[in-house]
Length: 81
Image: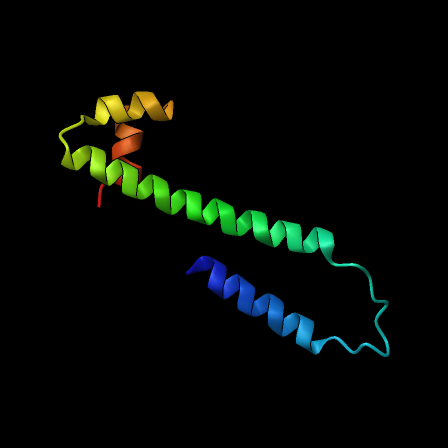
């Protein structure tokens, strides 16, 4: 959802540009940023699912915290819903 909001605001900004007054450049780098953001958000969703599945399978918050490189409390705070 966050990406959708950001993407909409970027698209609105792009639509507001007047090609007659704006120097046009290759947007390859900006597109790469957007693509990386999409991949990051997909990875975060995948991590949420993986943690939920681990909990459903009986893995402890301590074990999950170890894999995440954090404390069990931090893992629980971030992923328990």
